Length: 370
Image (cartoon, rainbow, N blue to C red):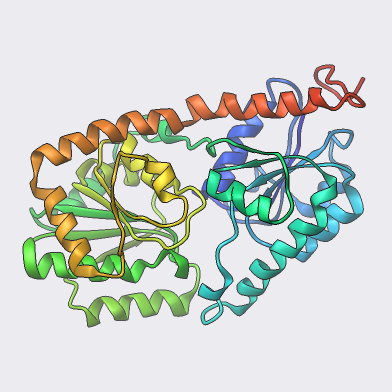
C-alpha cells in the first residue's frame, strides 16, 4: 500500500516504532515496506536499506517520509526518485545543542530545514506529531497540516513480564524511592538538569532516593560529561543503564515512584506517555510540546534550570499520597487517549482520506492506482 522512508532505524527508537506500527496497519490494505539510510543491528529483518528504494513495490503511490533530521543521501534519493510524498514531521532538534559535541549532527539539523522547504511542492499532505510541530511546518510554508499523536505503542509493556534479574537489581539499590528518567543521552534532553535535581532531592529531602537513567549513549564526549557532572553535584549512585529490553523497562516502571524529564526540546515525548500509562506520576519541564502531550496529567516545572525548585516538586510528588493518586488517575486516562489503539486508526484514516482527495489517483485497494 504505502512505503515509508526514515533517515535512521533503531531498536527502541520512537520514530522507528511508529513506522513499524504504521506498516502493520498498511499491510492490511496491501504490501508495504520501510526503508532507511542507517539501519542499526536488530532492525535488518524489518527495514530495507536506502539503495533498495528505487525498486520499491509501491512506487505508484506517494512515499511516506518521516522527517526528524537532515540527510543528503535521503534528500538526493527523494529528489531523484519520488514525484509525490506524504510528510510525517517528528521535529528537528535545535542544532546549537549539538555543535559542541557533534558538529556533523548540527549540520544535518540545519540542512534538514532547508531540505523540508525544498521538498514542499512534492508533499501531497503533511502530518505532525503535535501542534508544536505543525506550527514549525507552517513557518516553513506548509499550509494544511494534520495533527495526530505518533501512535505510541504503550501496550507493549503490558504484554511483557517484568524482568526478574532487573527487579533484583533494583532491590539491591536500597529501599528509597526510585526516580526514573528515560531519554537518549542527547544534549537537548538536558540530562544534567535531572542529575542536579535528584542530587538536591537526596541532600535536602529524601537521602535514600535513587535515580535510574535509561537511554542510549549517542556521543561519548557528552556521556562522559554527564557522569562527571553527576560527581560534581554530589549525586549518590546514579544508575546509567543504557539501552534496556522491554522486560527490563517494565521492571523499572513497576518499581519507579516518579518519572522525571527536564528536556528543553521535544516534538511529542513518548516516554512520558509510557510512564503515565503504567501509573507512574510524571514531573516534566514546561518546554516545547511536553505541556500539550501531558495536558493536566503531570506536574510541569516552569524553570527546569532551578534544581532546588525541581527537587521540591519531586519531594511533594513522592510523599503526598493524594497528589500521587490524582496524577496516576489523570495519567492513565491521558495515555489511553494518545496510545496507538486510539491514534493509529486516526493516522491511517488521514492517509486514506489523503489518497481519496486526489482525484487523479483514486484508491482502488491493494496494488496501486485505478
